[in-house]
Length: 460
Ligand SMILES: *Cc1c(COP(=O)(O)O)cnc(C)c1O
Image (cartoon, rainbow, N blue to C red; front, top):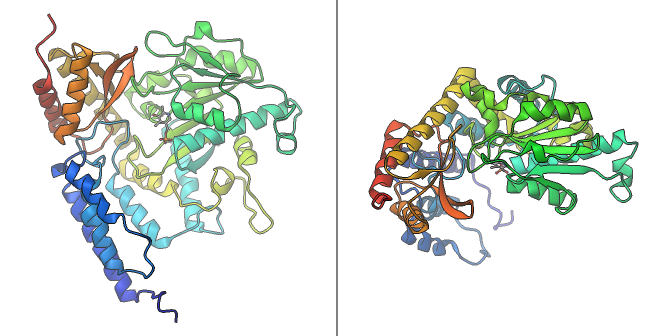
């Protein structure tokens, strides 16, 4: 045997995995005591990892120790209760546990032949997702890596289907000489929707970007005429304000025109499970939707869904059947960008099974209530809250730009909490997002106390 290729014995393998479990558990147990963003010393220590590619292999257990001792202190504790940045969510233990077992299984979940259990669970998770989000039953659900990837899948499916209706065979002829498609987004569309548009070759100057109203929703009075060659991208949950486009006003028009409507609901679609459902009214009339699980459903990364009302549209666009690998239209490799893939639907199944419809609704409800509480507290402390707080996002600024910047910098440097900055109406602001299942009332109150402390004297 090649001395450089020494496989562990079963005993060593189990010892290594047990050590990983112990270290992972110790990390989880310490989440609320950890700095939310690593300090400079922890970041400096990352240099210890910066070694040349080893010629000879090193001890596995020692590698894990290095990873934990140098790596864990340099993590952003977004899996803790005090992280209010972006809309990242934390990871629920049942999802982490399911992923651990999945790692041991090491399934290639592209098609049922690669993993019957993964195929079955993802079929079940797909049905549950359509039920809990109340989207048309029978839609295709592809479990992809991210909302970005899923938006690419959905828009590719949309274009191919529209061109097919126009008598153009996209697979054979591509885009050169194809009938033009009119893609429409709002000014407030997420950057990853624009990325999908660029990647797919729509051309940012060839699409229509519709201005938004005072609340950040697509201004429907400025909408160009819709036709059967339009793809209209709407949004459920804007990253700064949490606002929703007014689906019930525009969807019937779009349907009548034969346009394809795609909804980016990366986090906002989960509002549909709760008393905020009204924000999503009419959304079920769209043709495709993207929604993340790794944000508000609190699964680990990477976990998102591309949902398409007419399953054949997604399945034909994403098909990757080969002579050696044919599968049904609902095999995940035929619904996602991936061919070999992990079964991202399994953590979704695990969370939906453990929380149930009520549990998911309660989590969403709780986060929205916390956001309102934060907004009230900040207003009382003399901050300016810039949005209506319809969901879990609070957009804030201080008396002036300097104060806003100082508060952000000091809060981030404190290590006690973390939230991010943004620009709103051309001026700095900060964004507090509540999406971690670990966040409780006490954490919200600690955040408020810190922000009150950091606030300068009130505006006169
Ligand atoms: C986060 C986000 C995305 C991108 O999602 P990823 O899963 O990170 O690719 C798209 N749209 C909105 C509104 C988002 O909040």
